[in-house]
Length: 131
Image (cartoon, rainbow, N blue to C red):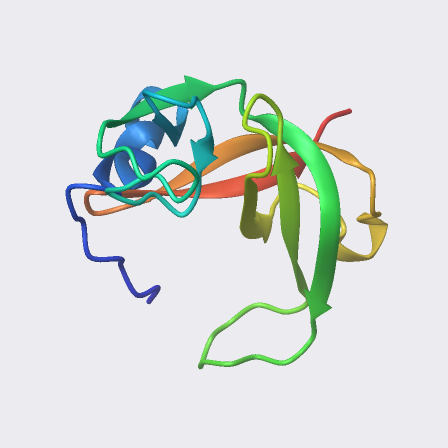
């Protein structure tokens, strides 16, 4: 069982955007900085007007790891986790599980696209290679 994040005013759009197939990223209305993880105040200009917007849902692998150790009973291994630079959101990196790929095939610089796994009211982002 995957633990679920607490949904708050600042992060609900990120965790529920997958219901509509959208990767939602917070942006400052004043300086247009992308903000992740989502926050109530822009860390660049201190503006309190933050809005979540859909981005393309693609990006480039910045880093990754392949896990071979089952951390919980019935956990399937190996699996890969990737840190992806998100297109359309400068400075934002989203870490998530890589799906629909051999974990040993992941490379730095590889192009990815988002998909989502639904658990209750939460839509977890996942990355899959762009073929």
